[in-house]
Image (cartoon, rainbow, N blue to C red; front, side):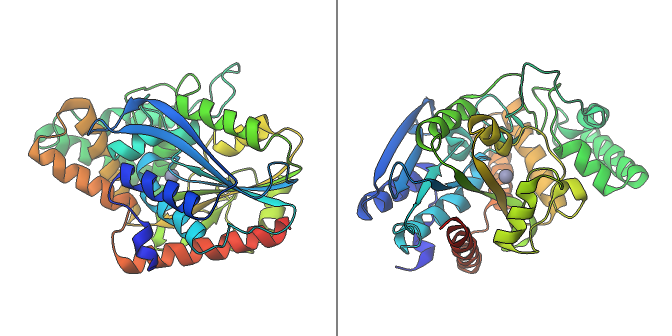
Amino acid sequence: MDVVEHFADRYSEAREKFLDAARDNAADLVEHHPHPGVGPAGEALATEVARFGPADAPNVLVIGSGTHGIEGFCGSGCQVALMRDEVVVRPPSGVAVLLVHAHNPHGFAWGRRVTEEGVDLNRNFIDFAQPLPANPGYGAIHGWLVPPRWAGPERDAAEAAIQAHIAEHGFAAWQQALTGGQHTHPDGLFFGGTAPTWSRRTLERILHDHVGHAKRVGFIDLHTGLGPTGYGEPIFPGGPDDPAHARARAWYGAAVTCPADGSSTSATVHGTLYEGFRRALPEAEITPIALEYGTVPIADMLLALRGDHWVHQYVDMTHPPCQELKARMRAAFYVETDAWKRAVVDRCVEVVGWALAALR
Ligand SMILES: [Zn+2]
């Protein structure tokens, strides 16, 4: 089968392809976590798990998709390819592979990056008993991001203010303030939330039930939207001095980047899934990366995200200009060419192969 066949046009089709591939390849476990909401066509939503290898394997490789909803078009296609191409269906002795499909099924189905709570799931795994991390830079720019009208003088003034801000502070500072995560503006972008989301609670339960026993855990979370188109950047989501950083470089090579030391296309963020893994699996040796696939230039991606927030905040999704904004949103996180799909699958198979070799 041509690998491009593993990708889907809609969430419900992606879910079907994932479950079919798990069944056809005799997964040792398939588990459904139904989501309380529905998709835009009334379709059911769920996070699903497929495991290959024994339940008590001391080494577990977790491969996740759809943390950022719409990015699941890429991640789901890669997961299906991994099952169909038998890379993961026969893991080495002592290793199990746990594929988690659609961490954020609401965002996947609705073509959004956020959860149903309007939350960036990769900013939501903070300890809410502690004071929330501050991001004062975000408050300064929030008012320009999603003006009440997407065309006209208000929007023009907002763009001029943004360009002046970037000219004064630099693009890196703009990216950090905008994308680093914030807990003060629930209607804003990159909102980390003020409580654990359904998606966070579901992933914590999956880790507790299926990974809690493991001694060594690899985690590959599949993302899109940053970096050169089609290239998969392995991003280490912790601090540069974390021992897991050196491990990630030993597993995946010198291409591993780290936002905290400025080597990544990503800003430094708090409340990542890695923090959730560490809290849920305190005894395990965890080696995490986000595999971040490039799509379009970052300025286009950020503009598409702002347009998506405008659509969902101010207007009806069936309104014709909204369809164009939703199409731009999709293009910012999913490049629908055969060449791109083949490139992301090839890279995924390569990276997963390195993880399995390290865990065996
Ligand atoms: Zn992402």
